[in-house]
Image (tube, rainbow over the protein chains, first blue to last red):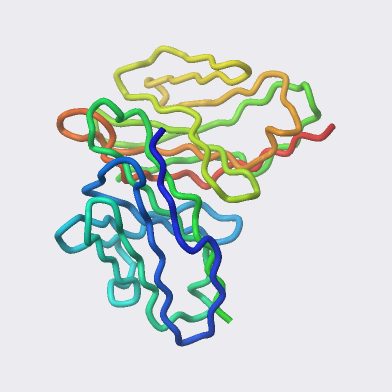
Length: 118
Length: 119
């Protein structure tokens, strides 16, 4: 079945540094990918929609200069948390639904990246 | 605006009991998709079911069953004869539909229900 990978699975960084998280669709192409954020014991909140070859669309309240998204190819989207602070510590999950009409039965989620900012 | 409400924050049952997780949604779209996901402590989301708004048939998959009631905007999930391995957080989610079929992919999640099944 379709697989979405994320790298790294876990990252600890110092306050003020930038962290890049990769989301890859391994056996299908995805013109659109979605980034979600989940605080401890909370729900998943959609942060942004990553569009291949064009600018990402951010949800209301999400700082686009803080969370840089680049969808450089049909299988890779990256989320960069710039100048990370402790309040950015969270679980970040991407999803990459395939646009093949034969496989629209689910959204494929990555395993998530746990970011801890000290 | 779209919204998903899971009123039950936490549920605790004893193994072999049946348990129903409630989900109520709001949308103005006539075509939409509903989902249930399981999130074990590892954090990875496990897909359970997707249902489109035109398919109101209830579904059963092993010990799992889903009751979709469009009239009450509910999509409830029942686990029969619960097991300890069912312990997890369960999320109900809603998404818009693409023009030519399938989900848009941008899911709106409920707050989740934490299910604890004790031996």
